Length: 343
Image (tube, rainbow, N blue to C red; front, side, top):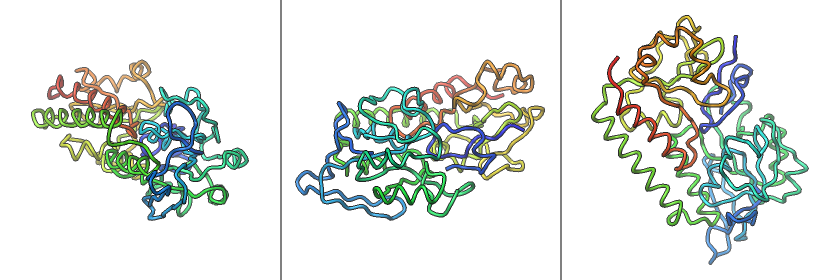
């Protein structure tokens, strides 16, 4: 049996084997985008940094330049907000990492390129003031208090001896997660109320408003989020994915699978039953390790879905940690809904 995809972890790419194995879900300084300079503090006038994360843990530092090392998801969010880490750890090399695509990584060093592993000597050499990541609750939590990116409690504790960890709750709606990273970026000295960040937020809000208007007109159209794997199809439970939570709040008629769940997050069926549901629109998981459009054509039952026959298929990108990527995702969905009809 092919391994199911991971549950939502802030909308990132993960190896398929993770969920089957354990249902795993879910910087040294930055500042100026031009280089790996430490970030300015939350208030230049006071020269102090203070931030309380979503675990109610507070980090206070009596300095205005904060060195940050970030897990790749958090790095994606922070860099789009004007905070550039000097170190990043994650599940892939920095070059070619989908989570870091299009970002200026000049001067940023890798602190780990295998999921769940962090190079402690390298981390220490970067002299971070804080380490930033995300956390989740639910199926697959590896250990109590676990923060994303650390495979073991010992590894996380070792990292904490080098620098305190700040973590954002990645199970909240995507819009909320982005706002919390905005709060952190502002505390680190970024201008999140003006400039490019404000423009990106305005553009995103426009995309949200247009989606809402489209949904109001076409609200009867059912939408199903699907992750296709080689031997099984996984139907997503919308209440447990951050971006799908937003879509529900904005009125999108998301279908909830009614069969037996392989975890809290998915119902899994064989390809013989791929057409079990007949939504008006199918959103297909677009992460790199899932089946793409060409591969799906080889599965006859996929092509028996009426939405597929009608060409009413969109991408479920699940990379929504920044306004730019999220805007693109919402625009794509809106375009599909605008042209879709009942099946």
